Length: 180
Image (cartoon, rainbow, N blue to C red; front, side):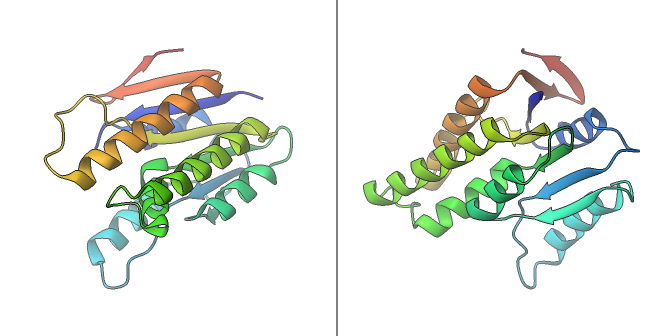
């Protein structure tokens, strides 16, 4: 099956483009990686906007951690469509869970292991897979250690996924640029 990585910056149109790559009339499993944050109304509104634009025939699975995300990819039957949105929010949770924000070597090893698990699950997914991730390599060097860590780790994740995906698309100002 075809694996597509859709990259883009904030508000680039990457999620909407990814949703257009799978059929609105087909049974799609939408794998949402965002973690809900108690009391964060703005985040809840963003999640609700994503939910509202999905066709009714799509099934949503919340998979904010590596185990549930890899399980969702592993359970996809051949021929089914799976859309994962997005890996930047998943990575934030991985960094949180590992306690990696201070760049502790042991915590970064955990992050690398989770990344390898995810890449393996992407390779093993039997369905048509579309994965959305933020492109963070085009901006300035972040001023904070945590910002640099996030940029570095997401850049590595995106590169590993690009290696195993059949198609890679970059969205800029709503326009898709086919990289592969």
